[in-house]
Image (tube, rainbow, N blue to C red):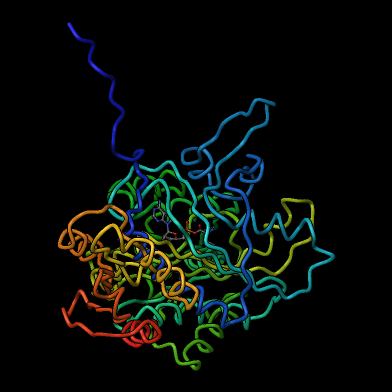
Length: 437
Ligand code: HAM
């Protein structure tokens, strides 16, 4: 019996994506636009390796991410290595390493791919690309405002209107302070340890049933206090309590400032906690208002104390990550992604073998003028060459045959409209640019 050939799977690894040219086109659309916006705000690009020493994530990230969601391995030199699950610790490490030389404030951005061992589902994958924007060295509310304004401007630059998304805000200091006040008003106390655990539990709330949440809350706080939290930790009560807390005034000032800067769709969400342990101040998420895409498009906050990881003093730091998976869903559902068109402007169709050399020369001269050109070198029939160009969504075909060689006049065919223009060589590039711009 002939031996059966072993076959490798054609699908990508679980939870990651292949990017065919049409997919890459959308990816480029998203990040080219994002790059344009953030650079206009003075943000400079940085980058790093996907590999990091595992210790970078141990102390201040999030139990869930470190213990359950990182890709870890031990290298041949016995070093513990983690494939980055996010960029914030990396940026902090890089700044810590050159803290004295860098000119603060720093406005940094990057577009890394990050990896989390999650159960893949709609909007949640094992690899995604994330625009990270962070502002270092400014402690005041102005930095928080700039970062949130930047997130808002990005959404507007993608074509979103104010009704399409909300920016939910909360503050990591306000949460325990309002809880403590709530307990006090009811004649009880919450310990520091309970506060920390409660924030972690609140973070997982969306992933569990209401009854399970209530049970865990009771386990943590006891019957009486958990009852108070369940009944009274509501947006209305919290908004009233905030005024009496230490950090409340600063947070309310942030909300007012954002409104006065013309961002109408901000909302205080007292249940927003965000999973990372390193946030210590303002936290926020940008959320799609459509129920079909309920997860956060952006998430961020202030994390001045992450620098302590390197034995350094805290440094003011605030920023966000915007993920490609969810922003893509958002843009698709709002029909905000442009139709695919190839990055090749012109396909040179070669009518017979004798024309190939002339076609290659013409292609080279057009490229020098900035036109992107592919030459069909297959020797196939003219009709087949034209079909290939159309199938690839190349906007133009240019035929080179005996006639064209003799007259120096070429037919530039617009493959979408089927319109045809007869041009001599020196007018081809301009005709292409005129249509494409
Ligand atoms: P994060 O909330 O984990 O924050 O991620 C930011 C964004 O990345 C999310 O809002 C979402 O769009 C996307 N995202 C996260 N996990 C996944 C996933 N498994 N699949 C698809 N998309 C995902 C951070 O990572 C922080 N380091 C952001 C930050 C920067 N904070 C301060 N500076």
